[in-house]
Structure formats: C-alpha cells, structure tokens
Image (tube, rainbow, N blue to C red; front, side, top):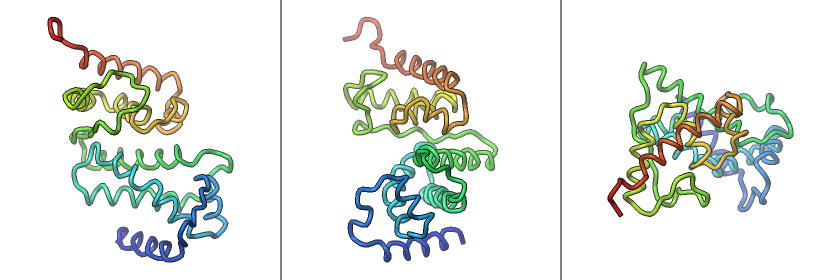
Length: 203
C-alpha cells in the first residue's frame, strides 16, 4: 500500500515538474518551496537524492524491494515532518538521519545485525582518502574490512568517507557527540589501514 501511495504521489509530481524546474536551487530552497505549496519541488528532491539513498541502503540490504521501500519511506517521513524542519538548517543531514533510522529499524524488526557486505566501487573512492587505494584488489580488501567493523564504526565511515559528510554533520545524523563520532572514525580507519598495509616481505 505504501509503495502504491508513493508511486502515485511521485507520478503526479513528475507531471507537474517542468523541464529544468529545479533551476539550480539548493535543497533547502526546494524544501521551503515544497512546504509553501510547490509540490514539484518535492519531485526535484526525489530525483536528486533517491539514487544516493538507494546506494546507502544497498550497502547492507540485499533485497531490491526492501531497498526501494525504505527509500520511499524516507521521503514519506520527510513529507510528514515538513512542518518540523528548522528553517536555515541543512536538509541533507536530516534526510540521511531519517534514512539511517529506518535502516536500523529494518534490522531491529528482524532481530539481527546487518549481514549484507558493504559495497565499495573504485569510482566511490574520495579524493582525500583515509587509506591508500590503488586498484580492484584493494577495493575488495576494503569491502571485507568494512563488513567486519562494528555497526557504529561502519556507519560513521559510510557517511564520512563514502557520502562525504563532515564530522559535525555525521554527529548530527547518527545522534552522537562530535567527539564520539571522531573516536569511532579513528578506530574504524585504523582497522582499515591495518587491513590495507602490505604484508611484510611483499611489494
């Protein structure tokens, strides 16, 4: 039922959205316009952020239908909480807070921890890397290392490294103090570096 409602809503919004309708507006401008009644702005936000949120969900969830449902629920909650958004605050961290809370609830309902491996492709590597990545073999090793990290460390690294959030933004998203987030990242990156260090006697 939820998927049908969201699909109908987005279908209407795409019809209303004219070519170039976003006009290069910021997320915050688009959301403010949506709250003020510009329904096409919501479709622009969907087109802008749904692909990245799907990637985030796929890092731990295998079933495509579950990924799609969680992304739709994220935007449905964004719509429902539109009156609670603090004007002037950045929208993207808030959107990811909703998404990660839904992902945590997904695993709580199943009574177990995430089991799907974290996806990491070469094109996702940041320009400023916490570890040196030189090829596909290293990417495979990073995937394996990330999958073995505790959930809290892996989540922080996903957001900071792969999604490009600053540490203050990560702290806001995960609901932890800035110092706690930095500690998790430091410990997680330390493990990743250890996994990627060449073994003694190898090139």
